[in-house]
Structure formats: C-alpha cells, structure tokens
Image 1: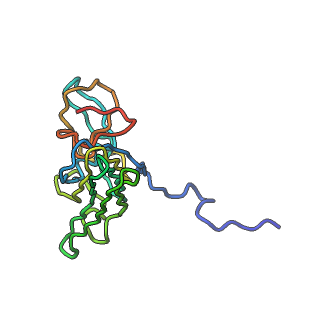
Image 2: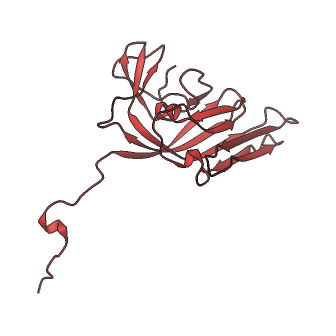
Image 3: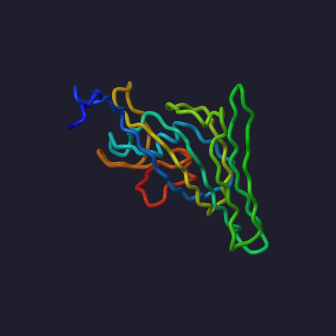
Length: 195
C-alpha cells in the first residue's frame, strides 16, 4: 500500500529563496605593499560590473556582499630580504580589532595568512555598498591575494552601484580591483578588468 504524502509539496510548489546568491574565490595580484583599506563598495565592484556608458561608466551586478575569508601569499623580493603580509579586521561596538600577520625571510617559502572575519567584526556581516572600512590588508608587491566572497545579484533594489572608469564598452563585463577602481593596486587575475 502506497504511503500517503502529508507534505505541502503535494498541494503546490514549496517556497524558495529567490534571490540569486553566488559564492566565489577571486584572485588578485599586488603591485604595492602599502596598508590598504577594504570597503564593501570595493568588494561589490570586484564581484563584477557591466559597461553602461562607453569609456565612462560601469555598474555592479551585485547589491549585497559578504567577505568570508582572505588568503595572502607574500614572497620576499630577494634572498636576504623579508616580506610581511597581514589582515586587520576592524571591530564594531562590541568587538576589538584583530590582526593576523606572517613574515618570511625565505624566497622559497612565502609569508602566508589565511583568516576569516572574527565574530561581531564589521567584516562578519552582509554589507550593502558603503565606504565603511571592513579590514585593512598589507600585501607587498608580487603577493597573491585570494578573497572568498558571497554576493547576491541585483534584483529589485534601488539601482546598481555605478563606477567611473576610463575604458569600457557598453554591455562588456568587467571585474574591478580589490582595493577599488581608482587606485588599482590589487588587480584581478585571469578576469577582464578596467580602471
């Protein structure tokens, strides 16, 4: 005898989370070792943008972003020199700043940091585009930076985030630098970019 189904599914489709959410690891290469702030607006641009005005403007495909993890590999420039990389997560009202750092003096073994936002730090929450600094990173020139992000695509929000750029084509897809489209110190690896 067949078992009687008692779930809601027999009466119609089940509910679903309709927003499109993507999780991806983005890779960047550093051209400068200065301490660099990470903002949610910069992360939104790194998730991808579409050209809307030729050689003038791109707009983001994502509206919300969550920073899950940062990894940095920092090789010393030469034998006898050192390289230090770090990630400092900024705290909020109920949490302190937390910094993770590593140093190497070997050209065969880079300095390496792998960390996620500590609980209650600004970077541990979903973010809308804003200039609030979530973290500060130090990655000497030649460093590789992997940034693990979750992001939700634009849907019915009040407009996409626009970025002014010097080179783009209408309808083209571009991935902006991790540190922002203005400075371009941490450019994406193997993805089409612009500034």
